[in-house]
Image 1: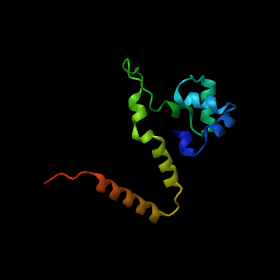
Image 2: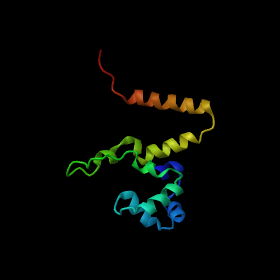
Image 3: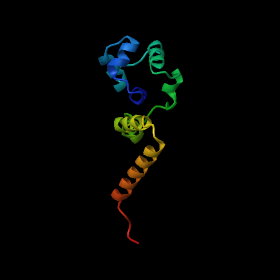
Image 4: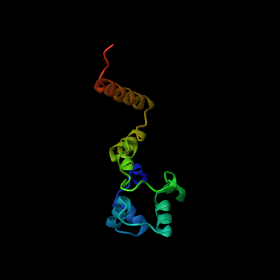
Length: 117
């Protein structure tokens, strides 16, 4: 999520931490585990404190058979949401940002079914 918000490609991040982009891809998917030293390198490359990676951590394990499907489905962490947020932050004009918010809100209202009443 942090990599996407910064607009850094997997290849660029891999170069910063001395890995191949395939290794970064496996870490992001959770196919490979990270050693503490590697996690430290990622925190430096992504300009975050190491505890950033533990903010959402739960002390209890997920129920058996639940492979963090809720986390993958979380709308906030979807790639397009992150890309939209990054693009939105790059808009310098306060007026344009406000107008864009109004436009999106109006689109949502037009797509939301109205209750009869």
